[in-house]
Image (cartoon, rainbow, N blue to C red):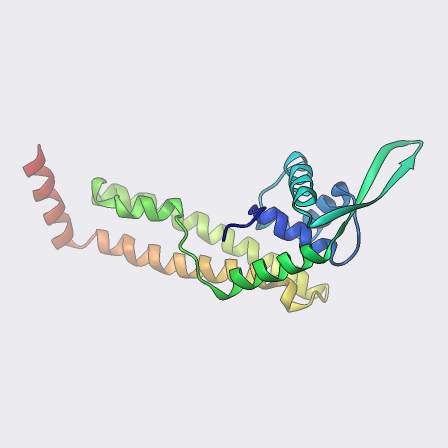
Length: 196
């Protein structure tokens, strides 16, 4: 059965509201402060839109409106019992059930034979350099968090990201080497010649 609100940002909002009621601006600040913006794409407008969708679905409720003379009024939201049920069901599904995803790199790999082997290997070399930079950045995030005493479970998505980056680096290295195999280069050139 499809979810009433299927945006991953909604899942994060529900999770953060289990800690305490908040205004959407505060939610956004905490998501960024905790590095969740590395896993979930959003902006201020999309955050407010998702909170409104959750409210309409009955997963969050307006708890109070705070009026301050120096700021516009702010509505504080709280998670409802239905929201807690939705959070646990949805999160449980995502953790337990692998889901087929369609990354852009997979599309490129499925069509890689269109490129000249040397060109493809060169492009993969550029990708490998970027992957190495990204892995170093994640290692830095993990080291800084460990030094700050952040509990490992709050870094699970970063550890997962690093594992994927390391696996992709190995794959890209092997693929680039395979593209230089003389038998493949010869077969690619023969195929190309037959098509022209």
